[in-house]
Length: 254
Image (cartoon, rainbow, N blue to C red; front, side):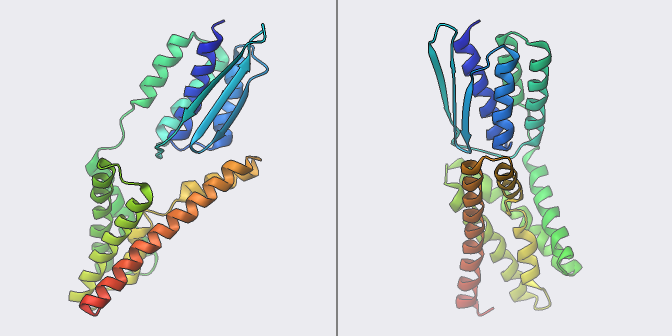
């Protein structure tokens, strides 16, 4: 048994799951099952949203540890589902490490939706939530534009490696500015409902769900970190929209 490859492959598996939005408890359970599949019962794993540590002791007492930093995370449920399926196949068939690494590379390179499709999805979500919160058809049309504007802003700032906190501020600022400017020229528009509908794209729903699941699963540190992350995202959204409201009211009197 090549224990070095075993530990590194398990760490890569956990990294793949967490960086694509899986719960911490799911990633840790997958790595433990990975060790069990290859007959290692003393494997220890520790994971938080930005860090993984995996270690085992070989039969001759030699400790092996692998550490992974996870600086960038995203939500890609297709990759999480494929990684889960791979874990189940590993437990059943115990393939060699070359096969596992090839499969993980394939999962990591699975395509995401095209940029235009993501922008349209953001726009539709904004329009739908605006109607849900009592907006009119005209409000929904403006919200469509506000939602569509979020994705280009997000992509541009990601290109320049801007911190995600400031990306949330900029995205909420831009969508709120568009809504208020339309409301300035068309007084019958409900810009509050338009802004709320557009900002629903930025609400960290999965992060909130994950922190509750992690806490229920007993991963208190990971759960608390996710909770703090959710609070920071909510604060960034509020700051961006608040700056837009104050600035536009100051200069345009809306």
